[in-house]
Length: 135
Image (cartoon, rainbow, N blue to C red; front, side, top):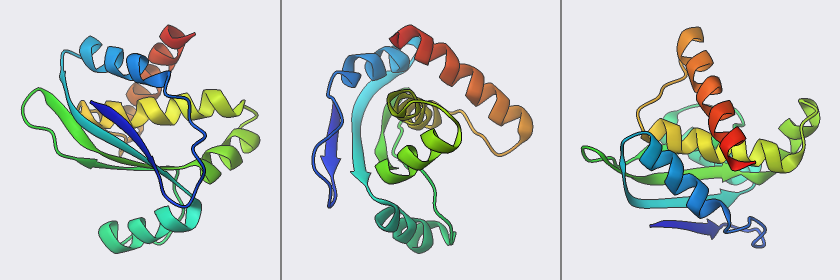
């Protein structure tokens, strides 16, 4: 089950993304467990980044993995404020950047990494592939 939660924000993300996100999981040969997206602002996610990862910088997403075998579960924290800023900076529309980040979290749970240049390129290619499938 995929659920959306909000911390200190109004509900703004369309639940129509659920079936698309489930399709990504199935396309990657995985099973859906329990995934919680928690939408928040920059300060909320910065605190998580500092407290749990010892990183002192803003980010658009942090994924906590609870995957067991092929069953995908976890908590995905997303800063809607950062997505908006990134969309402006990258000259993308907000919805496209939101879809990219939503897919990014799922892909992390599916086992994709983005630490090296090669891993990051593979992640971007997967994001692009699944964004195209949404459209």
